[in-house]
Length: 385
Image (cartoon, rainbow, N blue to C red; front, side):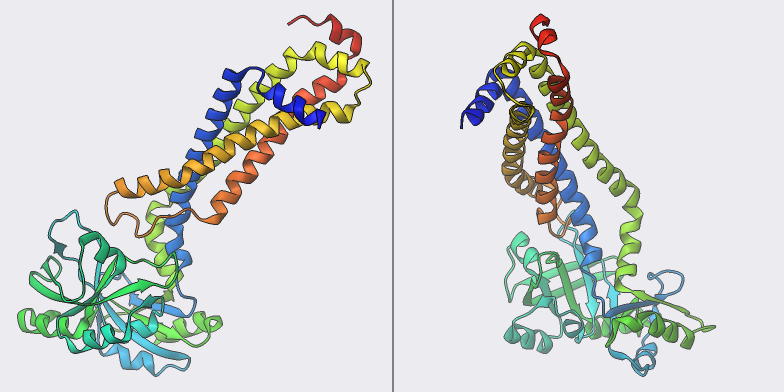
């Protein structure tokens, strides 16, 4: 108990210095947590990809369409359970700054994507409504929309005024499921496109292919692409994870830099705390000599110095983690809408921050402990500083 009392007294001996050290550690932990949250959330869209889903697109780019005639041919391949055509619609809702994904899909998409949970009654209404749409709960909350409301989009890829009725609102099954998307009937889009732009009808941008065995994804992908080899629209089939990764790859350099920066902050925390501990140990050189004279062992001196370092680092880390949650929530509010479909602190970020604070507390005490244990009693009494 006396040792713990000494640890607390030593830590609070220079209150301003200790306070500034704790403040520096807290700020660094907050910066680390915020950067790691951005990195993990940015990558979580890749992690959310279904292992049993493949994406078949045009071999050059997914912006070039594929004929509807490809669908029954893909469905005939052994191992394929469902095929769903998709079209990126784009368009503008109220204002260009209101960005969220807007796509047209076959009605079986909610069987292919079970992570989008729709109430059966609402889904039945959606199937009966020709211009019905399904929006995510995030979209509904952001724009204060409810079932039965009208959504009007100004088309850009498909020009014109497009009026939709909110028939259902889906909820994300998991935390990393995007709740900021809008889906509507491909048949509705296709009918109107064939009337207004005949040459663009009966086309999709990609096919989502559900398979019964993820282990055979490479084999099935090769089979699909071989069917359409040397055709006017050759295909490239890849896992949904690889398809999603191709979008994230465009920002990989920035994300990698942020990742390295978050770990560089750990080094800054260590330097701040190490500086404090070195100054404290230097000031107490005579005290440590007295302790040795009184019979205090190396174990006791190690405990005093290490305990003080851990106490300061744990308080700073704890304050930083406690403040991280409201700061991340505030950051989410001020971010441009749609920039991140979801934004939350993953448990791994808290574990890394906590582990780093403990590790830094230990490392920052190494040099002061070594100095205290290796300074002779006589030299300690002679020390002036």
